[in-house]
Length: 195
Image (cartoon, rainbow, N blue to C red):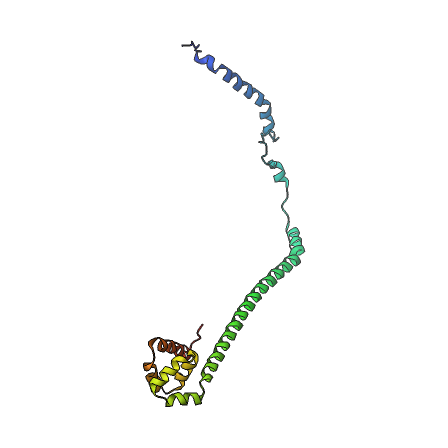
């Protein structure tokens, strides 16, 4: 085991004490200067902002009322112009939103008018002469013929027939054909917008 020399306690702290006394003696000349109002030396870290001297802050005078009024009157026109520009931009955005909604409304209106025309054409297909022919036929023969005809035309004819006669004809039809015609007739008779 290596031998270590142990120092008495006083000898261990001797270099620290010497440094402390040296620092106190070096600071004594500056202590008198700060009492006279002069600024002490400050340590500033690298990259840290330099603090303003307190004496400079105290020497700045606050602006008086006339300077404030002059400043406000100088920027009043620019501030008013900026407000007008901001309001104009907001109005343009609102107008764009209204235009977009109007366009959507026009599209819906055109779609509704198209649907209405299709319904009118659908009902006009079944002319009275054709309807009278099917009205005079036996229900089983009419059901057989309507099953072969275009589904839209068959539904239009059935809608123009007397409800009792139409129900008997539908009763005589195949289930699948009757279901298709009933669906078409129900959608055509609906008064609510189909979309």
